Every structure is written in C-alpha cells, then in structure tokens.
Image (cartoon, rainbow, N blue to C red; front, side, top):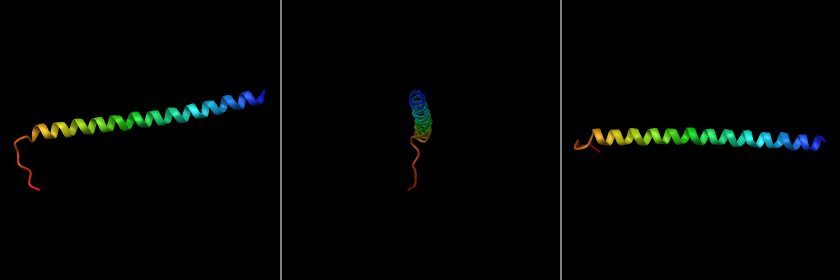
Length: 53
C-alpha cells in the first residue's frame, strides 16, 4: 500500500508547514505585544512633556 504511505507523508509535510506558520504567527504576536508594551511605557514616562515636532 504505497498510496497510503504517500498520503501519510503528504499529511505529515502539511502538518509541518502548518506548525511552522503557527510558530511564526506566535513570534510575530509576541513582537507586536512587546512593542505595544514599550510604547505604553514610553507614553506613561513622557506624559506632560512637550515633544518638538
């Protein structure tokens, strides 16, 4: 039954691609979250200070 084996291999490859994408999404979400936290901290620390354009 090589066909079943080929199908299983294809499923494994697809699952590995999905896992890779999910890890990338998780990493990007963490970076975005860290940036938002940093931005919030900067805003809190600079409240009341005038920024020259």
